[in-house]
Image (cartoon, rainbow, N blue to C red; front, side):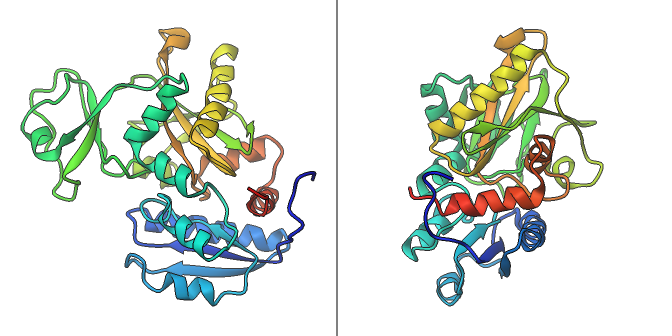
Length: 311
């Protein structure tokens, strides 16, 4: 392993839970990762963070005797650069992307700017006041409304072509939201492990790939490798690696696409990059790794070793 740090990891602390809307997913991911890390031969400390933002995390982490932190948090605070900053300050090696890439990928508008600058295909979007979105069509339907800084399809509204009324957003939505042109087509996704794209999966659902479809058993069906033309598959692999690099990601990421199969390559649109893909039994990145011949414990071992690489 040329270029690896001389440090070795014996004890891994797995962070899970936290205050975001994706707390339950994080708990599921964290437990799966902790079990796989034990199979891989590590001593594991499970750290379940409470639903209150921040809390005594610094004191908890400072008191741990661990070599690496496996960050299994999802959503705001755990995935947006905040906890990464604390770990940097404590000089604790941690998995997944760093402060800047995490913050950039979570901010959908700024991430799109970076991806567009890298020559990658993204849809047009605007940031609008939620009150305006409730009052009128900010874009011509069809379009999608979502928080600018959430993941896992949290708080997503689809306004279909011909809709008479604007969406009645829940009171829990932020004051300003992203409104983006709707990208029709098939759901595709590609995980990137370091500098290697692992494959292309098609996600098949009855409706659209919402929170329930992502995390409920039977909520979606995964076809790997996706039954798509070689040109589209290669483009997904290429775009995912380029997106990973454009945002400055490290470790494992996953890039989601929509492909309108009536338009060929012009119909392939990059939706977003997830810097901390889920690690639940229904999650896509571990499934792609397994298809590429990398078992779950081996994937966990690689992520821990990658966290120890000099930056």
